[in-house]
Image (cartoon, rainbow, N blue to C red; front, side, top):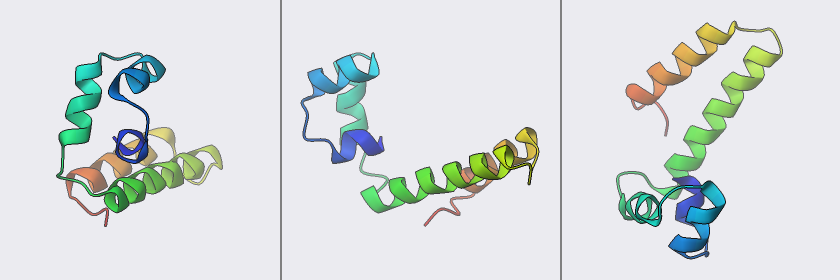
Length: 77
């Protein structure tokens, strides 16, 4: 969703890049529930938990569960 929100490419071009149907890109672009800032913060949070897992700070399951719980609880600003 973040890539579709910030990309200047057409729906068709993005659909080829992501190997999805153009309709999926259209729907992602039409979703106004999340601002670009919120999407970027969500990606940053997920990357942070991935790093914590890869560095051994958390197990894979704990990192995944924590990231999902934060997304569901809308703790991402």
